[in-house]
Length: 216
Image 1 (cartoon, rainbow, N blue to C red):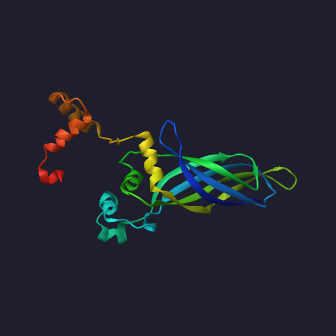
Image 2: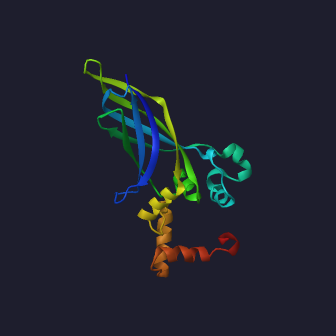
Image 3: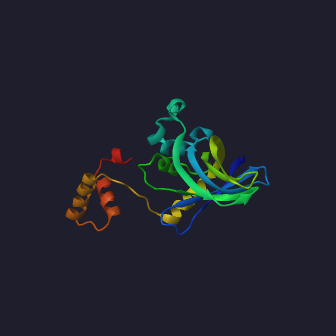
C-alpha cells in the first residue's frame, strides 16, 4: 500500500487564465519508491494560519475589519478557511511534482481577500490539508485503491508579493466592489442625475459630500 508524503515547494502566477489563478507546486513522494502509482485524485483544504506571523501597525489598521482592535487579538485572531482545490495526478513511480490550481478573487466580501490585501510584506502562512484517493499497482500487478488520510498536511509560507503580483496582473490599478442591487441603483441614479461620466468620479463626489471627520 502506498505511503505518500506531500510537501508544497512553491507557487507561481498563472498568466492568461480566465480568472486570477495561482499554481502551487506539490511534491508527492511514495514509499516504496519502486511501486507504480497509476493516478492520484488529490484534494486540498487550504487554511490561513493568521496567528503564525507578526503584523506591523499599518497591517493591524487594515485588519480591523476582520479581527477588531489589536488589544483583542488574543481572542479574535484565528485561522480561517481560504479555499478548496483539487487535481488529478498522472502515473508516476517514486515521486512527482503536481500543479494544484487555486482560483483567487479580489472580492472584498471574502475574508481571505481582506486578509491578503491588508498585508504589505513578508509571507502568508498556509496549511494544506490533503485527502483523496490513490490508484496503484498491487503485488500481482492488479489495480488497487486506497484513501489518502486527512492527517496528511503541509505548511507553506506564500510570499505576499506573489499574491499582489497576481492581482496586479489581472486587475492593474483597480479593485472590485460588490453592492446590493438597490444600493447600486441609488448610486447609478445619482451618477445619471448629476451627469457624472465615470464611476470613480461618482464615488469621489459622494465621498466629498461627507463631513471631513467621516472622510478621515
